[in-house]
Image (tube, rainbow, N blue to C red; front, side):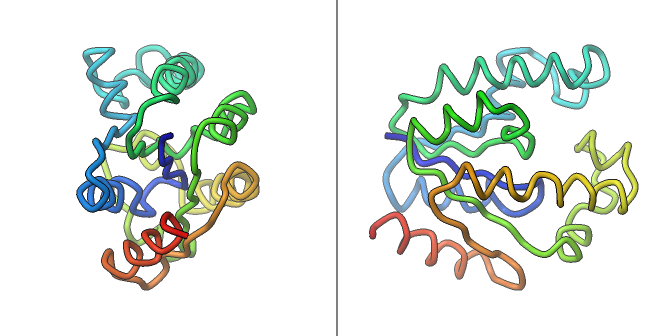
Length: 165
């Protein structure tokens, strides 16, 4: 059964996921990287060339492909945009929602040229997206971890306690 890490971009899913994989002896699959390899181009190029809708369709296909893997799977921040994806997550494994305050998130993301949604949105627009997605993450997850002001090690320890309980 997979361990899914969900949450808004920049909360630490990829970083924490790599560490959980090492501790649990599981492969780690970053869905965004998986999609980039499958498509042969960067996420930002997929968004620019084919649009967000096309990307979300690929994301759902990849989620279906990965849902039975015994692995730590870190998802893209928008995975919960489709109800179908939320249902797949809920039915397929343990789902942990990582989150932090928007203020800390903005500090982490500001100026990130690799994230299409950061490039094209202001702080206020991202805050609106964050606020809209937050209940979707909460409804799709089994447990939540607030990463605000926490080190990677603190977040990792909290997540390991939840996984092992």
